[in-house]
Image 1 (cartoon, rainbow, N blue to C red):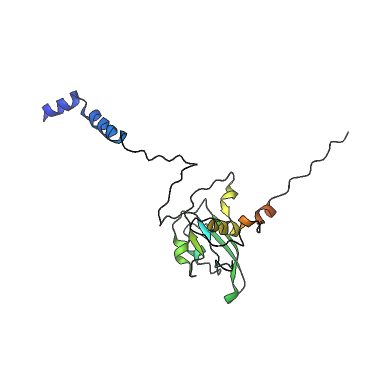
Image 2: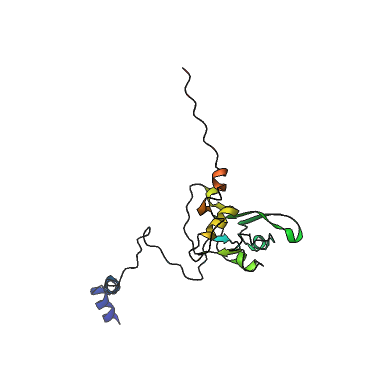
Length: 182
């Protein structure tokens, strides 16, 4: 036992084992993606951004304002303001705070509508300079779903056709510059 241990220390056996693993992987095809041009293809059951859905033909909202997704969310990242009573109830305002969302999928499981009104998409990229940029309101949540790659239907209500300019209306106008008085 002592003899083999001495031989292993003399020949630096641990380094040889480590270098053999390095040499094995040196000749394999690399798995690195060149990010902006190549994108990772998520699996079928991937839980990406949440999106609100509409009826394909009419553009009618599928969310009935039942508040089940808001109640099921363990981190309280979903906020819904409803309007109407009984069968006329609908979600007047719908917000998801993606800084708090842990993409658990409990909100989609709690949704009683068929087809589901809130779904996980395959989108995983987002940026924001401010915290408010990651709080998505109802219209942006519809846009998330409309940009989904597997959706090929008509988009008469979409932002892509310029019919919905809500975001531009919400931005504050720049103050008018005044000429300096002389």
